[in-house]
Length: 251
Image (tube, rainbow, N blue to C red; front, side, top):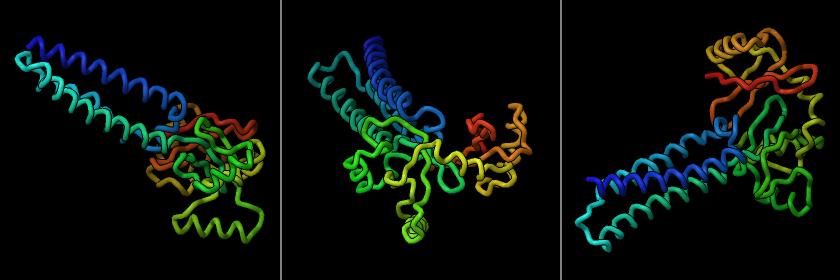
């Protein structure tokens, strides 16, 4: 039994170390709050933890036997580690392709823009044109303004594409502008919690309770929805400085 526990402990230590290094790097670089929440990264992370930290070491605990030859034991553990590595590689690729690159103000809300949201052709063109806000593989999350183009025909094409499930303006880097240039439009879109259409009555009640608990006024037009693939959040913004004061869960 001592042999099994030793093998289990070593396998658990190695698996946990590898997973911690990968998830730690992704979190510190791209998935810090509210990125992990808006992108629903927790589902992928739980899968990685389940396979690499729970299942792998447990299987080693089962197959480890001091009576086995080193060749047989090495083969058994090698199979387990191979499955773990496949799961680790898959999860890492999913998290990398879905990493948050921008938090964009567009039209009447804030949205997280993940790497997978950006049109591939537009990404390539923006890199070739060396646009200041072009996405690169090393880009860290940035706050930007993504307005619709002033050309009505072009704007209508983008809106039609978005309504049909295609690329929205937040996926087109050529339209990105610095965050500061959109502050006037952002101020015009700030609303009271009850006026924001992206939340249900139940969510609005919960939001107001959490705002009051944090000492924030609930009757001021200082809020805007922050959206992603996960549940939407509420961004509370100081109307004077237009700095984000708080980001609050609705559920």
